[in-house]
Image (cartoon, rainbow over all chains, first blue to last red):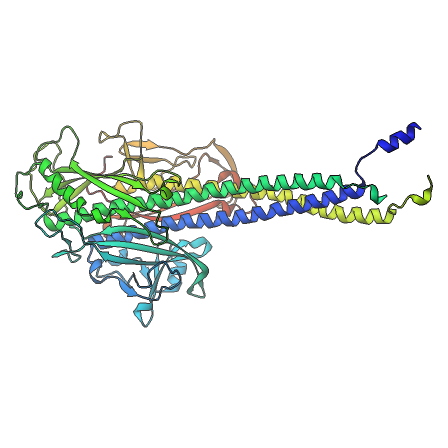
Length: 222
Length: 195
Length: 198
């Protein structure tokens, strides 16, 4: 009698239930793994974005130095077209010429190369201009993370400033980029698009290009 | 026998599993979200820097062209610092229609507005005709920018004007250095006041 | 109560079901244990990102000290406010970031010093020169910060800066420590025309 009572009151789990429960929990644990993977990818993407922000700022340092202290703003940049990947950005932009020296800087200060192999084997400060028969198809690239083989495409636009108010009788002119006459200062918008990878000597864009846009004003000064 | 298995443990296990999974998801999201905000905050900081430096670059180019001539009524020698500063201020004021910065890859609610104030150098030892001036940036940001991590820089530039030639150095701050209006200047200090 | 009404599972059925379930549970357990190391990696990457930001911001923008410097201000100028680039190094003997400007020095980013056993050149931290020697590490700057404002400086006013961020905690434990060192290559314009207050 006591044994029967004991048997009736045992409402525990059967082995089937325990095994099924373990299986279901295993499925959840595997699902958690998917979160790890997604987070890891997202963090890698954020790391790359931060490197791109630094790279864009570094590029703007070089570019503003060229505009502000040399005659680069006269006719240095190459006019290029065909930037159609990102709809919000202009399709016509400026990019680096095939060389900065001897016109704008001394030979040792020229960071541009037109050789893909020099770009790949040289240091991370090199900038690569891929030169075409039609210069409007030239493109410039700089490293964002050379260890991972990730580069970014450099281009910019300039717009002459037209000041709204002009207090003085001097016409509100900036020094023009020849440093000889009155001219205009420019608003400069820099676009660094990424990621690009060098595949057999040619930069290849990822399917989903992202951009870092930086803007400033440039003007030649003495 | 199977009829007696109510399956109560499955409900319990499913709930426990769902809670654990949700907790992990929220944990990961918070790490990723915080880092994402910090990265975009760094971009905003960089953009603010270049906006403020752009204002300075414009003013320096104006000095180079106009030779610190505002209305050109005060020129030549013996111009007080307190008369030179409004000329520098007028250059910054010319940028009133360029003070709000928006970016093509951001929404219209993302903007940084920069304002620069020029004045004679605020060092108490400054002489009346020293030629030492300063330009201080301030900014306002839209709600989208304000929601990101970190503060934006406030760049301050100190310079001396009225130098004799390119590459000349400043005269001492506590000396009268001629009060000249020329195209030449020397940058003495560039600081981020926001630290 | 008769034995006929016991419609349970046979021993073979139970054993096969238990084996199958056991394999799945074992795999899930291994996955769970591995995922803890993934969590460490994700945290480490986020930390390295943060320290890269701090280092970059100090180099770019400088800082404010509690003491007064040579020019009478509390400013440490960023490289953008320098006239001549500082010398290479910019870190303490235990790899903490050390920035000097205006005769003021900041070491803002230190950790408790740990001793790392080297396993080869650059393994697990960049300063390792050989097998078996040790490195004392109390910061995140993996190698001397290199500043190049020489012949390649544009118009003599830009400086190329190379700095490395190393996570010493993870590097000494990881199978591939190289993933916990990240190197940055940046350029700054040194805008100051007057002499630096050194």
